[in-house]
Image 1 (cartoon, rainbow, N blue to C red):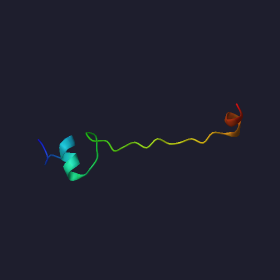
Image 2: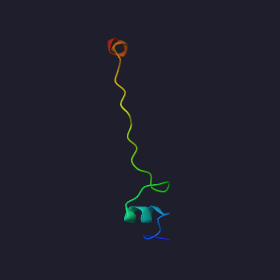
Image 3: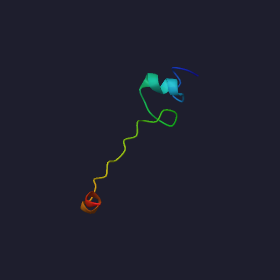
Length: 40
């Protein structure tokens, strides 16, 4: 268990992959305001 193990966070960092133990950065979706929300 360590740098060579793909199931651990440290192993995922060294191999450059993402998964359950090292999730990729989540991008939040931006929702544009409608005309009614802008006036209120």
